[in-house]
Amino acid sequence: TTAQKPSKDLPLPRDFVWGAATAAYQIEGGAFQDGKGPSIWDMFSHVVPSRTSGDNGDVACDHYNRMPKDVELMESLGLDVYRFSISWSRIIPLGGRHDQVNEAGVTFYNNLIDQLAARNITPSVTLYHWDAPQALYDRYGAFLNTAEFKADFENYARLCFSRFGDRVKEWVTFNEPYVISVFGHHSGSLAPGHNRATGFDTKTEPWRVGHTIILSHTSVAQIYADEFRPTQEGCTAIVLNGHMYEPFDSNSNADKAAARRRMEFYFGWFADPIYLGQDYPAVMRAQLGSRLPKFSPDELELLRKSVSLNTFFGLNHYSTKYARALPDPPADDDITGNVEEGAINSEGEEIGPVSGMIWLRVAPEGFRKLLSWLWKRYSIPIIITENGCPCPGENNMTLEQAVDDQFRIRYLGLYLDAISQAIYTDGVLVKGYYVWSLMDNFEWSAGYSPRFGIVHTDYKTLLRTPKKSASYLKHSFRHRRERNQHHI
Ligand code: PNW
Image 1 (spheres, rainbow, N blue to C red):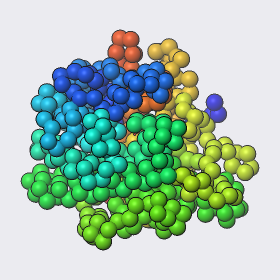
Image 2: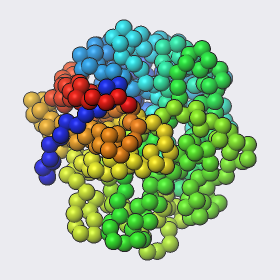
Image 3: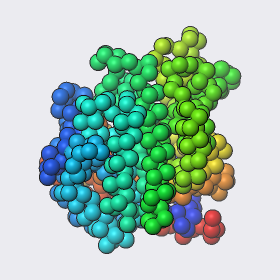
Image 4: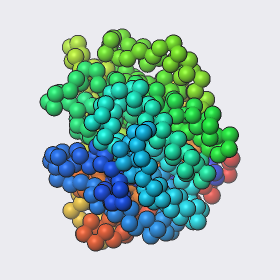
């Protein structure tokens, strides 16, 4: 692996918060315990196991049965915030608004939230991190039926706000609508696995799914503001993911336009309606025509009204890519804006050293530029809701080697430096950083081999062992926050 330069340990604001993130299906296990209903990930991993590298989340990290110990661990790491998601089918097994609530599931999350409170860790709770109740797809196609899905999601959100909202003040509606739409309903590499080969309409499905997510998010943000915020005084947001894109040939106007267009197709798709209260980006309308659903005048009015209900921009970011303009007209199911993306530019230079996953290269300069791009376009405070990486070869190491995760320490250090520069040099308002992930866990289609944790998970014994990056983060945040003389 190519060497990385060391971090400069640049300062961060005194009130900057740090935390660690997980998602229900990736860590909980207990997939069929205490009345939990099947989710699309239970089905996806069981029906065709090769789609998840032969692995599944039946046991995962067994967090469902080890939760109190895990919260103790979080306290020892010095986390300010713990970001987790609720498994919808654990608390409403069949998911719908006329279906029964599973009190055992509600109790699990109540206990988790109480344990966090007892240890002074602030919860940040995501309602939807990809594990839809299977029944919603069986009944009406879930996201593909906007009215039905929205009504069921509203009911589920109300249940969460009313049962947990006395103690949870930071709510995220959806994690990564781009991934739900494109990986779930275009490439089909993630649940529910819709793609051309499996007989689905990839020309329209991703855009219809995205549309449903935007309208469902908006509606739930309004419900929270009207019915819960007056007494609970919390906030709602959405988490978007995406790479930074640089032109393949920095002298080519076509490639420069391709890089900009790719970012509008990635971030603008969701962020223009949600954070600007307006239609999809013009470049998307121009290319996609009738493939892209329309907002009615009433829906546009709702979007406009709800812009200010989004108190921060949740950003999941890992890496940067090069974008190259394609010479031919776009494919009839193109989702990129007719752009080819890669890790090597026209000069043959790599964007950065490759981590333990092929799509994830170390490129902190791109991160800094992305933060500025988002701030200029949306001018809303940003929280980094995910960032991290697996070390090269980490899954084939002994425990002793794996916990000495110098590659990750350098990656995290450089990405934190980028945040510092974005704040102090570029004037971007970044309020917090949640590392992905608290512990090694089920990495979706890649199964258990990529290890993103700052804590090592032994999948035989389920023993947790903090890696060196865990103590690095604890000390680095203390140091960076102390070094800072300013207040923002
Ligand atoms: C995120 N990409 O997904 C998810 O929110 C996590 O659940 C996941 O474990 C984590 O990143 C690591 O992969 C991503 O294509 C999906 O660049 C796709 C991409 C990035 C992140």
